[in-house]
Image (cartoon, rainbow, N blue to C red; front, top):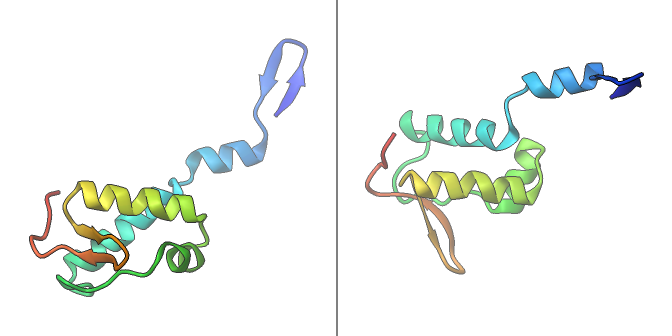
Length: 93
């Protein structure tokens, strides 16, 4: 951002970032689409947080946030020490 007197003028990068879909939303939408299309089936294991981070070019914490949303929606289930799997129930929209 640049300051001109009392007015703050957002940079071009700011506008590009403001118009970009948040990374976690992009991951949630991609995995939801794969589940809905049958590419990921009930019981399939999802990649680890680190693998999702590499695959989508995001941070591990962003991958965790995305999977948390998918769990909250009932699309995936986390199993302590085993990983995250596509839920049997299919979840809610």
